[in-house]
Amino acid sequence: MTPLVPVSPTRKIAYGILFFVAFTGVWSLATFGGFVSKTFLADPLTMLHEGYDLFAVHGFAKDIGMTVWRVFGGFALAAILAVPLGIAMGAYKPIEAFFEPFVSFARYLPASAFIPLLILWAGIGEMQKLLVIFIGSFFQIVLMVAMTVGATRRDLVEAAYTLGANASGIVRRVLLPSSAPSIAESLRLVLGWAWTYVIVAELIGASSGIGHMITDSQALLNTGQIIFGIIIIGMIGLVSDFFFKWGNRRLFPWWSHA
Amino acid sequence: MSKLVIDRVGRTFPGVRGGGPTEALQPTSLRVADNDFITILGPSGCGKSTLLRIIAGLDVPTTGRVLLDGAPVAGPGADRGMVFQSYTLFPWLTVRENVCFGLREKGVPEARQIEVAHRWLGRVGLEGFEHHYPKMLSGGMQQRTAIARALANEPKILLLDEPFGALDNQTRSLMQELLLSIWETERKTVLFVTHDIEESIFMASRVVVMSARPGHIKADVPVPIAHPRPYTVKTSPEFSALKARLTEEIRVEALRAQVA
Image (cartoon, rainbow over all chains, first blue to last red; front, side, top):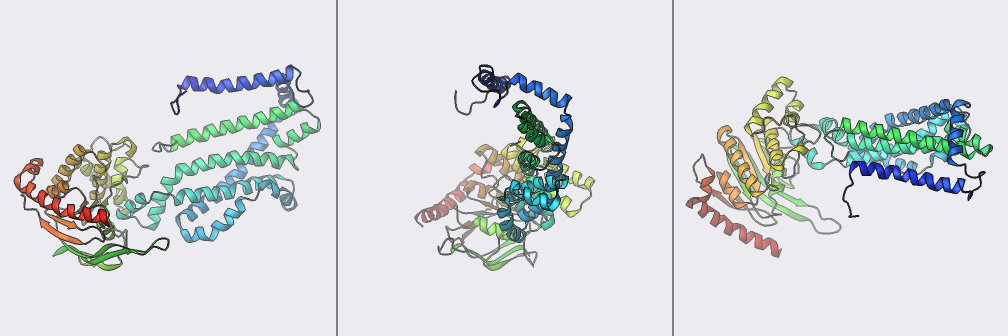
């Protein structure tokens, strides 16, 4: 192996698959070989069987739908409000000076710690779940967008000024387009975090969703279902990530880091 | 009448981290006639870029003022086009969209924008590249686009800050010929900053030599070589004589800059 030398696309895919084969191999060895008790860890076949049961008997598809809806709902709400605020902060330093200290503080507040309060305020309905995602995503997006916009190449801004752009022209025609790919990239990252918040929100005080299924399975010591649920979350994340990346490449063909 | 009047313009940068203030540019005066091509020649760090940025309105002078057509300059504007040393094409816009940037900002109708862009892209030899993104172009092509972008805006004066500094020697020579031929046909007022002696003589009707920091004008040398100037004038005796003289002027300053 030589540092930084790329691998061919076929090999890259093969190596990626190899990991999952090795992982399943170790897992199978541990469970079928009797090294780990069935109570603590289900074997791969039981997991698949339980997964089938979840869909066929327990209506798991509805749970998945609920969770996906909550993630995208809360995330979209946060993004719609956070992106404009982040842009305003990045572009106008007084606005940044006003909000930045609070947002930096709020960013470190763990979204999960708000769950008891949010249950008190919003009950255990959908609003509470959306708010958990919102709190977890909003401040992160604001800061990342503000940083991206603030880091716009100064020479491009100066070039636009010498071409006759005024302040609003600078924001609309330089800061926005130059930051757009990085903003989309930040949204992709935060969406990944939103998935962890939704599961936590569903572990407490929910009657549907993947997180709720996992707590139910814990009560029944059904590790197969738990593992299946976790894998489903990972797969949905992978798919949404793929579409985000694909969309970014299509939207910003001029961007070289995509 | 002078197109551009630089009236005792000086620039002192405040000290950083407790250090004393730095005088980048001593109060400097210069008059630029309409349709003149002037190069400002000086060693690195002599304040020549600072002077150009002040004219462009991107920097504010500590003392003095700049007058363009008799009106004082207060901030950047479309009447002073600028080409930078770094590649400043907007990477998210195609070559043509880059050239149209200033026109769109002025509210020129789209059909007219495309017409103007077509003319200027033809002038700098980039027809057929209208729909390329900057990252697909070589450095020389990017700077040609930047020149077209600045000229399409019809500025009263064109400011160039070492625009060919990052290009290889051969490309640089071709770019000098291109810019000179544009000036010979279009007759724009041009102020060109460079540290390259040959470059400063080849294109200019006047070479303004600046001293090492703190910068001030130490010589104003006319270039009495007739136009059009083919690249072969670079080997003519009069060119060589000027080059010898300016080399001496600059060498002294470069040595002083080294000691300072």
